[in-house]
Image (tube, rainbow, N blue to C red; front, side, top):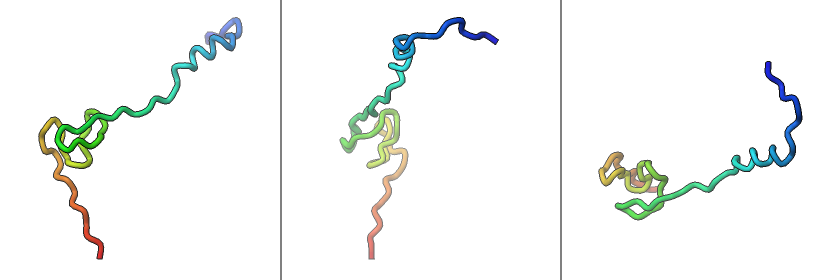
Amino acid sequence: MAVPKRRHSRSRRDKRRSQKKVRPRSYVECPKCHSPKLPHRICPNCGNYNNKLVVPPKEEKEKG
């Protein structure tokens, strides 16, 4: 099994770890209802994808 001959420096270790940061999610505007949604996903508000109705929107249930 291959084993490194010498230890990597802190600088080299940190350069590698610098790419492992958490990035914020990107949102796009739904062309139909203009609510924010994740790209390439069905809009949770109106149920459209690519300007076509894919899933009928859920109606809110009345309490009481």
